[in-house]
Image (tube, rainbow, N blue to C red; front, side, top):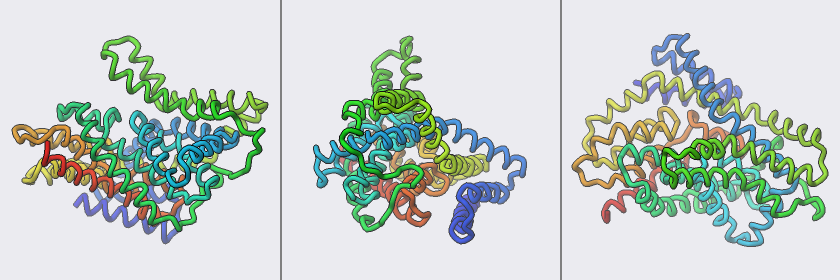
Length: 438
């Protein structure tokens, strides 16, 4: 019954947005309340769930999205994004530009949560699409695929690292096996899939990117552009690496965790950008602050939509759907690799969060590994692959893709949901192939 209610909720949400033209923010709140009622939750409890979902999502993403918008505006207005993308095109050429984007997304995605990596790099995708005249999806999909795969498969990313500890897997071996599965998954879900959408005429939201031409004198130096754009990446990557090297009791760990936090790293990058891309180029501080304020007001509705997606997820979680799924699969008799993938897939479909899906699935299927001879490292990758499947309305990544690529609901399903599902399936296939040799 809970799964039927989720399907009914998805249909209701689709009808509200598509046919009644109600904003995604209000539609998500209405659907959240309807799903709660169908699950026999008290109205007051539903309101508490919605508030908790809004609060937790805003709390974890608000600063990242706001500072990301500020950094994006600085890179766009100063010409830094143009300078970087011009260098990328020069180095790789148009024929290999997708490879450059995949490598960038892969390196950024290892230490950074998906949302932070996406927001740091999306201004470069906008600038690349404008300067090269290549389709936005053609350039953006390889980035999204690389960020998503690292989020699901590879340590030191937090989600796969956490389930590696749950399964008592070797993180280094998990990374090695994960790379074997990740590379083909990124290629299939990125460059190959993007060729299906090259005729789509998508443009960035006008409030996030205004194309313009720069004279050589107006452009900042390549060094200033790279320092500003790479600061959050370097801080987060350094924090992840050093945290693995230093012992847990080291006094510097707390400071490193603080500096490498995505919100702090983006905050630092914004102020570096204000100086290198603004003040050094002769802009006055009031003008810079006005520009940054405009960038935050532009993403207000995006932030509300993403937060309301979190509310939808919270109502589904509080209704007991995850526990219902656990009961369904607990008696199934199948390969632990396939079972953990199926459990993660069901929970992902039900509650949206990839991290929650993989951690819950790992906890449920851990006892099945004992005495089977199944590689614990492959269990980690299979669980992560399942946690990426069937992304839809209750996933914040779904709404971020829709809003930043300016797609319709139907287009978002056709691109984002298909991409995530391809990654999930190719991840399982890769794990089953490796299982024959490991």
